[in-house]
Amino acid sequence: MGYSFNISTFNNVLRELSADYIIYAPVKIFNKGVFSDTDLVTYGQIKTLEDIEFEEKSHFSSKEIFFPITQTLFYFTEDAFSLPKISPKKIIIFCRPCDANGIQRLDQIFLKNGDLMDNYYNELRKKVHLFVLECKYSFDTCFCVSMGANKVDRYSAFIRRAGDTVLCDVSVDFEDRFSKYGTYVNMTPVFIESNDIKVDIPEKIPKSIFYHKLWDEYSERCIACGRCNVVCPTCSCFTMQDIFYEDNPYCGERRRVWASCMIDGFTDMAGGNSFRKNKGERMRFRLLHKIHDFKQKFGSNHHMCVGCGRCSDVCPENISFTACIQKLNQAVQSSDQRGLKS
Amino acid sequence: MNNPYLPVKAKIINVKPQTEIDYTFRLETAIKVASGQFFEVSIPNVGEAPISVSDFGDDWIEMTIRNVGKLTNVIHKLKPGSHLFIRGPYGNGFPIQQMSDKDLIIAVGGTGLAPVKSILSQYCKKTIHLKSLTLLTGFKSPADILFREEIEEWRKEFCVELTVDKDDTKNWTGNIGLITGLISKVSISDITNTQVITVGPPIMMKFSVIEFLNRKIAKENIWVSFERKMCCGIGKCGHCKIDNTYICLDGPVFNYYVAQNLID
Ligand SMILES: Cc1cc2nc3c(=O)[nH]c(=O)nc-3n(C[C@H](O)[C@H](O)[C@H](O)COP(=O)(O)OP(=O)(O)OC[C@H]3O[C@@H](n4cnc5c(N)ncnc54)[C@H](O)[C@@H]3O)c2cc1C
Ligand code: SF4
Ligand code: SF4
Ligand code: FES
Image: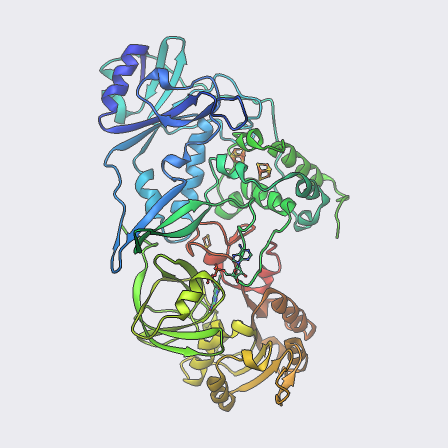
């Protein structure tokens, strides 16, 4: 059902929702950008519509709201474990279609990979309601259309801001909250139908491509900083970490912290064995995970990557993810497989 | 809700040093396991690591743990009566039931003997059936030999060939040389009915497989067990992934026909 608001009536809705929900949206933080003299656009808690950054793409995804960078799994004392308490409040996230789709990719890993469900993820995730922000235009590095992640069909609300007017398509669960302050209108969500960047993803990846020289470039350029993993809405890896408290070394907690497949140590094992020592191999691993392995493993309709372009945006070495996809595609398509090293 | 990350406390009922750095810990637990599976073993405050089950009975499991780092240092100081925390078992294990009418050759290097040990003891106890069993096992030096007493018992029940890479003691009378030497000589009477399991350091497994292929064993009849960094054991942390395969879920045991295509 569609509703129309002005800024103040929409803020009334937000105010009422905030009694039961913690509300997150892209926000702009002055001068805190990844690069110097730039602003940071990231997900933060909001109270009013004016807090929401509608114009720019957020540099980080919303995943840390329900998959925190550091998450306590349990506390231990000498003889007992106890679980962390979580807020009884539910969560609303204002996010763009790519991030909404990214959450489904994470669901696949945390909830459906293997027989055991990740209860920590599930507990936060089931609180989350998505208010999808309409994209008015595609940003420089977006390629969501190629990834089929430009559209979402399930959301709690779909939001379009046009000047001082806010139009919403609202699901039944939130109907009451919106109808109270809004006026009924017809509203059909509009999605981005074309990006400047298009990629062609090879369906079949021959194993020989693993040894192709195209990856060598990345061994030279990539500095293994892992920023591309941090900003990615679909990167889900983590490492376990036990810590103890200084004042009582018998008490502590087990945590998980985000891990990055591009950073040294991701595969290190006791005894000194490690894999993918070259950064080119790591680039291959990350790229194929995003545009091949996931889809193949889960037999899903879509790849893991949602085409948000953030990994290209954030790379200090200007490594373009989409350029790499195109190089891979060319290498796979070229029938003579020129460039194979062995 | 079910919390797969929460470990349970298991009492150590026996500690048996095998070598200076490898100790076998027997834990009291009724958890049912299969040969080749592993647990995530931890000490709160210190850390957690994947460790294979080296043997098991109705109300105990054993793990043979090498002292190599932060967690294993602390585990090695534990005495009977103290506790470890475990969650699992994880992974698929060896397809032993499918081998009942087959000749089985097991070729292992160093600590690779641990994950297959329960197959050997069950064979002796006649709780699993095989047409025949041969163990080829290699260690770096005589001082590194694991399960010495058991090996003597096994020799009475099936063929055991043991080799060391080098001998510093000068009084070693057994084989010297790499395990591939044993593989090249092992007697194979019925090629199509022979199954092979090989476990050990990556380089050892690689050359052992090559040698078995030279001996005309089909890829489909060779089984290998992978070791990778594993933080969760349940398909979430991503560390063990190779291509579209999660070693903790789909492995650690793989048929070589599949394993040959896993490229890190
Ligand atoms: C499926 C599976 C089954 C296993 N089964 C067994 C088993 O039955 N028995 C067994 O003993 N082990 C087994 N392992 C291996 C075991 O998990 C590791 O030995 C264990 O994780 C070591 O933990 P730690 O905390 O003691 O060592 P850590 O402190 O994590 O690591 C110590 C070692 O790692 C290396 N290392 C650590 N940090 C660095 C660094 N910063 N730079 C360079 N090198 C570094 C060093 O070589 C050092 O010796 C198994 C592993 C897997 C995946
Ligand atoms: S474009 Fe990059 S950051 Fe965005 S989903 Fe794909 S891999 Fe992740
Ligand atoms: S952000 Fe760029 S330099 Fe850093 S790890 Fe990723 S590809 Fe490499
Ligand atoms: S060990 Fe975590 S995914 Fe396999």
